Length: 257
Image (cartoon, rainbow, N blue to C red; front, side):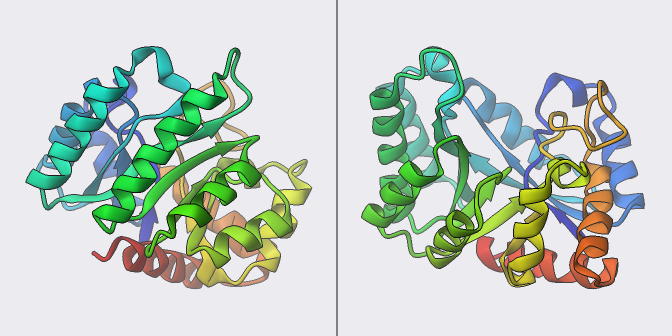
């Protein structure tokens, strides 16, 4: 059983034939998918996608992504997010949220304010977070410490150092491992994946983004989380089944499913 801990099934690439995509994922051992929202206008699609009838279980995360600042009406969207948290019992995490220092005109102060507000909601509603941390791991670790999240979260698409990974794990985070680990050039990430206890890992695809090695130029797919599992197993010298079972347990426990 595989848990794809980060897949945007609400994106246009999956709008047609979503059951086909889910069938293919199921055929490759995927039993659960975490579907994060990135803007308030996307949240209804995330909710609808997660409620489609299919054996592959989909779980809702709602958040305001730092790369979409121009699309956020921050005060209104935060109120809407809290209203969803009050009214719904099927939201399992807040996210995707975080910081991004790679984008043009990052407006770091605004990003930090937005992140702090979402971390406060996570603490108040006792939820984990799905964290975007591109070129911002240290800043995010500092802010996580301030908010003292009981349930931690998932460090999505982690690409940092061993020390940074250890600090996040100490704060209750799983390290999200996706398509990047399938590239031989990703030596630092591969070393981190091999050195961490398997209890600290979560597998993900970020489909339709972050293609695996050999699939460049085409949309990613949740079924390929199985290939991520195979790569991690090979690197660690463990069986794919054991990696799949333990990482599935990790995410299930984090989300309290």
